[in-house]
Amino acid sequence: MLSAFALVSSCKKDPVDPPPVDNTSNNNNNNGNDTTPPTGNAVCLDITHVVGALPLRLDQTLRYQNLNGDSFSVELVKYYISNIVFMDSAGNTWAEPESYHLVNAADELSCKIYVENMPAGVYNSVSFMIGVDSTRNVSGAQTGALDPANGMFWTWSSGYIMAKVEGHSPSSTQAFNAYVFHIGGFSGQYAGQRIVSPSFNSAQAIVTSSTVPLISVTGDINEWFQTPNVIDFSSVNIMNTPGPTSTMFADNYMDMFTVTSIQN
Amino acid sequence: MKKLLVYGVIALPLSIAAVFTGCSVDAEIPEELTKEDVKFYVPQGFPQPVYNFAANPVSIEGFELGRKLFYDPRLSRDNTISCGSCHMQSGAFSHIEHRVSHGIDGLTGTRNAPGLWNLAWHQTFMWDGGINHIESQPLGPIANPVEMDENIANVLVKLRNDANYPRMFEAAFGSDTITTQRMMWAMTQFQGLMISANSKYDQVQRGEAQFTQAEQSGLATFRSKCSSCHTEPLFTDDSFHNNGLPPEPTVMDAGRMRITNDPADSLKFKTPSLRNIAITGPYMHDGRFVTLAQCLNHYSGTMYPSSTLDPQLTSGIPLTAQEKSDLLAFLATLTDYTFIQDPKFKEQ
Image 1 (cartoon, each protein chain N blue to C red):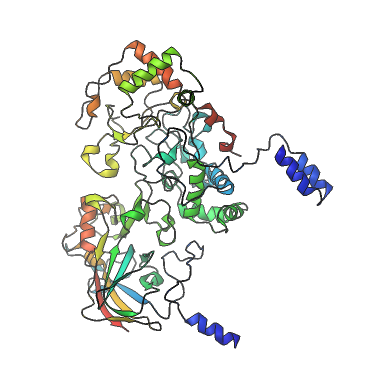
Image 2: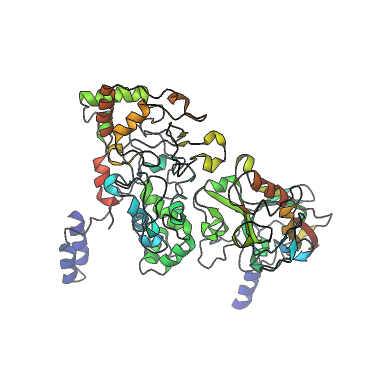
C-alpha cells in the first residue's frame, strides 16, 4: 500500500506548485535542466546541431564549408536559450519562470531542454531568446545555468557571452589557424541577444498532465556565418568584444533554428 | 570580557577544563564579531546605496567567510596572490607605494590598484567601469592574466577540497554547497561593509570636530573648483571623465572606450573617490603621480588636448600656491583612521 502510494506520487506532477529547485547543488549539471525527465505538464525542445547539410561533429576535421568558401572545423559550441514563452491556440501565452538554459553541443543532455510545470493546453508557437536578457547581465552573481563558472561570463566587462563557437579554418590568420567567436554585449546597439520564434508549421504541441510533447529542432551552426552577413574567416577570425562584428553574428544566428517535427 | 564570562558559565557544567579554556584566551586572539560589527548602515549625510544587501543579508559567518576569501592566495592560479596582496588595509586597501601592482609570476598591470571603501555606493567598478555589479567585481582580478590568472571553476574546486571552507559556507548559507554565487555573496558582505565615514571631514560635518583655517579655506576652494566631479559626501560622481592626462605611449589606455567601444569615451576614466586620498598614492589611473602636489600641478597646468577632454577642464583649473596648500590641508582631513585600523577588516 505504501509503495503503491509512493509510486503514484512520484509520477504525478503537480502543475500548480512546482517543487523548489535546488539550483545551488554541486551535482547540478549546470545547464539549467532537471536531471530526471518530467512525465507530464512539460515539453522537450530537442536540439540537433548541424552545419549546413552535415551533422555537427566536434573535432578538428575541416569537414565544413561556409558560404564564403572557407573550410573549417567546429570544436566548441555553447549558447544560452532563455525566456522561453509558449502560445496556445487561444492566444494565451505562458512564460517559463527562471528560464535560463545553457546549451553545450558537447553535452547531449544540455541539448534536450525540458520546459516543465506548464499548464495543460494546445500550444502552437514558441519564442525564446538566444542569449541572456540585459537584466541578468546587471544583477550580480548568478547561479545554475548562469553561474560564471560555466565559462560564459566576461569578467573584465561584466556580462554574459550569449553564444560562442570555436574551431579551425585554413583561412584564419590567427595562430594555428584557429578561429574564436564569442558573441556578447547586452545593451545598446551592440547587444548580442536575439528573440526568435521558429515556426511550428501549423503543428501543435499538446501538453497534458501525462504527456510531454517532443519538439525536434535543428540548430544550424553554419547560419552563424551567413544571412544576412557572410563571414569571411580570413578577415574575421577572432572576436571577444561587443561591437559591429559581434552584432553581425547575432543577426546571423537568428535563423539557426528550424522545428522539424512535433511528437505528441 | 563579558563574552568570555558567558562562555565560562556555559562551559561550567560541562567540565572544569572547558572553563579554563574559556578564560585563558590569549590577548592576540581577535575578539569575536558581534552583530553590530557586521551591520550595514548608511552614514549620516550619505545617499541611499546602490547595493543594499536586501538579497544578501550580512551575517557574522558570511562576513568572516568573505574575509577569509579576501585574504586567501588560493584564489590565484599558483596560490600566491590574494585580494589583500594589492589592497592593504593600512593604505585604505590600496597598494601602498605601487604605481601599478605586481600580480602572478611577477607580472605587472597597467592601472593603479584603487583603495576600497564605500563600495556599496558604486554603480560601476574598475577604472573603466567595466564591472557593473559589486557581486561580479571579484571575478575580474581572479581571471585577469596579470593579477590572479585563475579560473573561477578551479577556485571552487580548491574551496570544496579545503578542510574549513565547506563548514564556513554551511555556517554562512545553510549548507556546505560551494558555488560562485555564494562565494561572491560572502566577498560582497566583507567588501561592502568597508564603510569609511569617520574622517575628520565627517567629524566636522557631524559637529564633533573643527577644521583649521587652512582646512576650511581648502574646503572652500575644493567646493568651487573640484567638487563637480569629486562630489561630496562620497567624493566621486561615479562617472567617467577625460581629465587631460597625456596618454602613456607604451600603454595607450583608451579607458572607458575599451568597455563601450564608443570613441566619445576615449581616455575617460572613472572619478576616484578622494576619501583617504592622502594615504592612497600613487595617483591617477596609471599611478603616474607620486604626490598630491603633482596632481594639483597637473590640474593647474596645461591639459592634453583631445576631443573628449572634459569641458570643465579646457583651460585647466587655475590654482594659486595658497589655494594648493590649503587644498592639501583639506584633503588630509579625508583620511579615516578608524577605518584603516578597524580590527574586523584585518587578516585573521
